[in-house]
Length: 446
Image 1 (cartoon, rainbow, N blue to C red):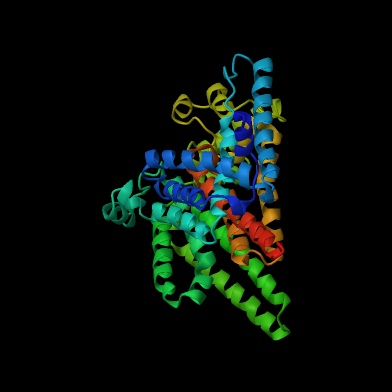
Image 2 (cartoon, rainbow, N blue to C red):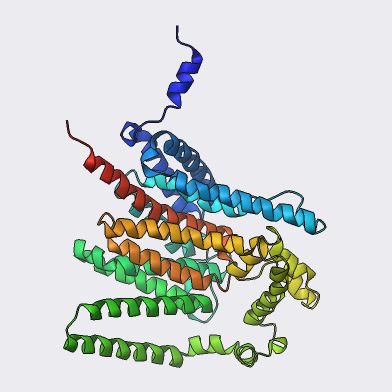
């Protein structure tokens, strides 16, 4: 006689990835692809698809994923829950009148949805390109899904700021800037594999550049310039190390000429200079350290809110004020104008918001995610299991994302969370794919 408990035990028994049903892997990949494409334009469909992918992904990791050591990353989830709870608990104890009635533990833990999603993407060699390509496609068609189509693009060319209905212009710039970086990172390998790809890739790069230019988001311009400069310097130094003396002179000379031409374009471009000079008075006040006279312009509002936040950070530097810390800064800083308090409920800087909400513990935790994932990725790249272009993408996206987060709290909005989840899903899937392939190659043949 077989007892029901034995069936349950057998059902939850852990097995190898090879024993996983193929249909289950395809279901997960299809759902993630739908989520990646539809999140910006069809959120209801994305919600259903992501729920299925996450739940089945957790099951797949538990039952078939012992080889990828996912428990290391799940520790991040537990740490996130713990420090969010501590932050809320201390607020309840020290300033109960300002603390939220219940802890909101999803604010940070939702970042880690990429863990179960990565399990499905790792199951098939080209699934990462399907998912990233779908996310890029969803963004590229956004003018005709959430925006006003060609008329909005033409309006942008004629001088109007455009956002295609993706929250606001800054968030649109984040998306198109990221797609642009991805296209640049993979243009060369795509061309080497498919010569004809040069035409569509070039057109897409031009399209992204046009949108970013007419979108007029200064932080996106700055982020791309910093990313381009750092990447160029790295590639130049890398090339110099393996070149002869004469070739080194040519490389350095070419770099300096290119830098001079690019700088000349930036400094003489009317649209760029006019957008920057809008903040002339604010920049002048900041450079003279006269913060009290900074006007409440776009940048000025940000700066004043950052100054206001320093008082709150000093009072609770370790664990912060809880998930509503950013709102407390705006609501309880007496010298901020009333209209600013009403219109703005956050600090337009992810790092400062994190310090206010969760203290140095929260900020250290955030950078730890990038460091740990980065170490795992570059270990696989050095071993030859992952192509170097993925490493370039990781570092350039991190650079661009880091600059953008200085002027907007992207990761505290759905747009930034989606961006982070899709990107990290692909990176982690690449890492796990390399491990799964390595295990299969080392398995003895019968």
